[in-house]
Length: 245
Image (cartoon, rainbow, N blue to C red; front, side, top):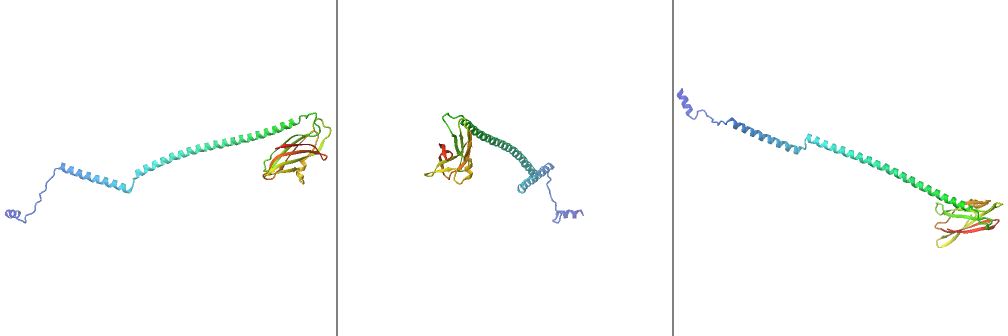
């Protein structure tokens, strides 16, 4: 039996024997670490590549959203601050405009009052006694100025009986307005014939003085030059005076 077993081992039909080299365990540990490191690096590379393809991660998106929200809050605060400032400036501007309008109205009122005082002063000055040589009715003052409406003029007339008259003067006022229109000159008689509404204010009836005020209209494009004022009583002209405008 031993001989048969020995011969079987020495022949071709003998069992195969594999010879393996045994590596020391430190070397195997190093190789295992290298393999793990390579696998980890490959995993990280694949993860980063996947992030580049798939976009930012949840943490980065949250950080970006927080940053944008912070910017929105800052911009909102700036907007509110500038809006409040603009509102304050607008309120101040409205106050200044109101004050300016009030000052303009006060200036207009003062100017009107000044003109009225000037007229009153002129009126009272005209009431001063005339010279001893003057007898009968006299024209103390006459003014013509635009009345605001187009082509409408307003006149003011003051007539007086100087001294100490014993009787009332009864008469009327006639006026002739000389004006130019284009290259021609015209005359407008007041009161106009058939105009009862302007004839009444031109009637005179007074003891010491009477003030007459009224308006008249000129044609379009007319330029007044002068006004001849006549005081008439009993069909006769008592006094007349021409006033250049």
